[in-house]
Length: 288
Length: 288
Image (cartoon, rainbow over all chains, first blue to last red):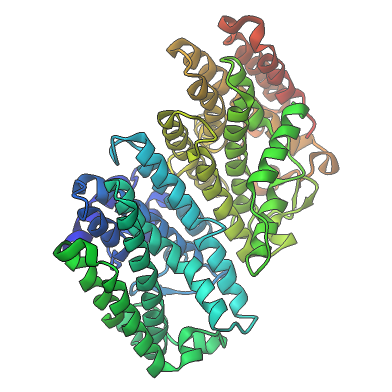
């Protein structure tokens, strides 16, 4: 994972604009929000899924960078005062604290836009049908009927008490869709079979749920310095989460069960999928 | 223009999501910010440019709708309190006033994302190379090195006194790039010759400048009820504009000169470009 993270960092550094003039502040904020931190879990999923089909890294790293740009934009906007109002992210001041709100809004917008520019470029894949599929699926995963809709759902969760089914649906939108896309991008780049696609989508589904439950547990039990962002926010806001509904013990068991189930979907790839199997364990055992 | 506006409205209505559940508020805000208003000037430029090459309207209207989604997202975000802090737009409360800031941020994000989903869909054009070109060029025009960079530039204009050359560069980014794209989309869809492309880019360049000067004049002399948004903002903020630098009289002459010059670039299209020639006049004579 750290090897992929380093490669993704280099690709992102190359893709992000820099320059002088009045826009320099915007470019600096885009770089601040994207570079020098993060687990790069989504790009890792893109690259590891694409590896199953022997896709050149030069292609999968660009697709992975595009997903990470979307993820970073969503963090910048979600952290804004009008949204989750967070001041700490990856152990540093959030973008609107380090810069200002207007710059953070524009930086998020520009990162979002850049993701599609990266995917549509022929450096991402020689086949334009594949590039269009990458664009269309990412837009679907990230937009109003995907991740952004999930954030709207999440804001409503502070005012309504949701049950387990609603929390599941919220998570499927807010974090699940981008996890699914990350694995799907590998299948699209590698022109994988329908069976391979189904296996990776089932894997991504369980992995995403396990990740979210682990996230809720970190919010309850994690250390702010280690996690790098404010913790205890869900309980403070009285928000229903997997942990508040299941309790910490059962939630941990459920996350472990899902991580094992995620790995079990990968049987048809044999040893080639070992990295993806390891990631399922990492996702529930991580401390950050 | 009003015929195209009606057709674009129908396409947008069809493309925008609707539904129940906690995301319904987001979908409603996206619709509020997009439907029922606006001159639809950019989609008109896409359609009229594509008409020069006999592109089917079913294609050009979708590309036009995508540009309008980008334009509407930019209005929603630019109107936010952290940016231009506007409460009136197209004669109605701005999106964050009608809804709230978080919803407006997410609605803008979702409109931006939807634009790329629309372009990447094969309904926009059967040829995936053309769809990828539409996506890549729109992202380039709208992103940090285009429109969003122009808005960053514009925010800096309230703190620095820019000269004419800087105002020109600001305008080229903030409004010019999307005007250029609108005409370029017609060339891309119609696979126009390099000469046709150059002619339309020259037209779009002069049209965009004329449009901006007319906009500055409306901010100085327009009627708030007619214009549908707050006027007198530039002078209030002490912002340098074409009008503050040239004076109203010379600015109006310059806008008229540019409108005539814009039309003159279209000679190679003969009578087929009459609509585009008329638009150049409309842009400087409009009252809203």
